[in-house]
Length: 185
Image 1 (tube, one colour):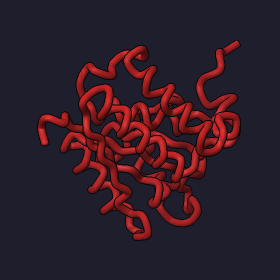
Image 2 (spheres, rainbow, N blue to C red):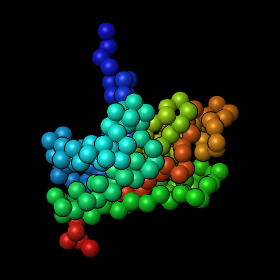
Image 3 (cartoon, one colour):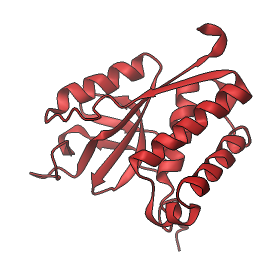
Image 4 (cartoon, rainbow, N blue to C red):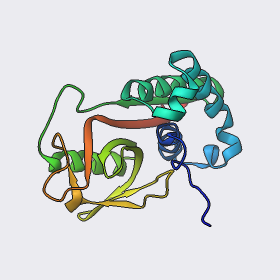
């Protein structure tokens, strides 16, 4: 019998996506261990309980608004506890697009400059994940549910997956993160 993985019984992918994206954006060993992320995780649990409920988040997952709330919590936590400045943006918020090419270019450029990217997806996976790398053939993922990649040929950004496309990137649920030392600004 195989053990269950994150996501089999819960909907915590959003929580893990935020933590993993922050770790990727920090880019050094300050958040390398689970122990170093516990304070951030506990702050997120408090935010979830205050904004909706932890039970609801575990059962139903997180909305784009809750991901934003967790990023705000992280911004405060990282500044106070680690001397880091977290910035994020939603580049396609209220700017729908039907062309995947510019979306992948923006994600790739942001990653190449040391930023991290959280993606909300629907289709085969209703899921929050983190982009590790963009290639001409795939989005390589840093994922809490052991997803490795999405083939570019199987991705769309239309309203619903179509023509054999298994994964729909939710344009309004793309977050670009950047984290810098307060001393570097």
